[in-house]
Image (cartoon, rainbow, N blue to C red; front, top):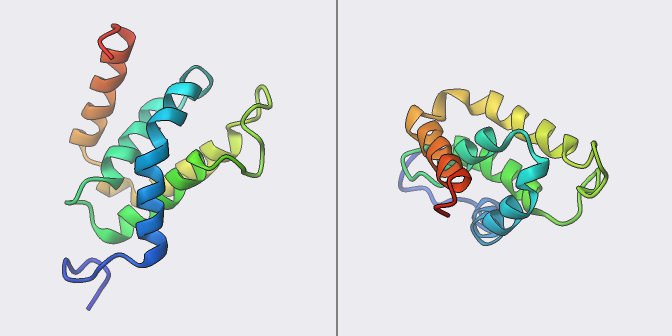
Length: 123
C-alpha cells in the first residue's frame, strides 16, 4: 500500500496541517495580500492542496508549506518590511517545485478568478 492509495488515511500531522490551513489561510491571505507578490502561486497551491483528486503526497507537501505560511511564528517575522515573506516564499516555491505536475490548470484558473474578483470588488 502507498500513501496515494485512497484507502490510506492521512497521518495525523498532515490532517492537522489541513485543519490549520483551512482555518487560518483566508484571514492571513487577506491581511497579507498587499505584501505578497506570490499570491497567484499561493492560491493555486491552496486549491491543489485541498483538491481531493490531488495525490496524497502532493497534498502533504503543499499543506506543510501552506501551514508554514499561516503560522504566526516563523523564521523571519512577516512584519519585517521587504523580508518578512521571503521565508514563506522559499518554502512555498520549494513545495511547488516538488509537486509542479499536480497543480493543474484548473487550480491556476481558480486562483486567477479569485484574484480578479477580489480586484473588481466582488469579494
